[in-house]
Image (cartoon, rainbow, N blue to C red):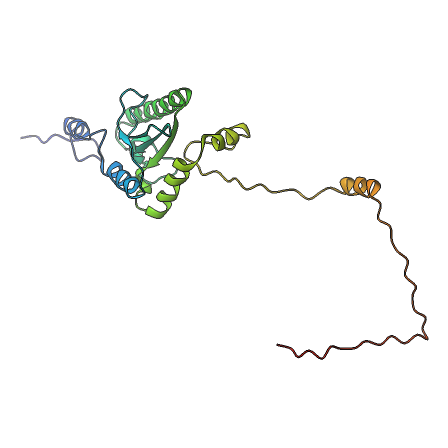
Length: 210
């Protein structure tokens, strides 16, 4: 009996691989459940999988008009993540599929933005660092829309990032110093310089050091 040889690097046949991929559900995944438990512990309440919104967001906050997507690093191609590896078999197929996933995600987030919804992407590799993820979620959910619009106006906002609202002032230039001196001249008081024959004495206070 001849044994069927599968593509190199894959222990499953194409049919078995397809069946396995079909069993992976688009919602209620382990990373999503972890994010939901963390949000509930922080005191936030939300809705799930609103089909009337573009992309069917995983977690929806209607009163804040904000949504959270919990994306797998492999399928949605988390930039710079080790989990976003490229399969060795059928590279053309996978490249096309991953490209379609990235374009669809960007399109859905853009459509949500046009409808007045703000989006945040949580990657599955971020679930392990609870403290960092907690700060990321709180910063996104507690940030007001006015802060978002002001950040967008200066080009400092992008979804999923933490805003730095601190501003720094650059030191004034030499030209500005000269202008200030012209407008507000400083009058120097001339004090007599004691002659060499004058003895200057100082007295020390008797207060003891502590």
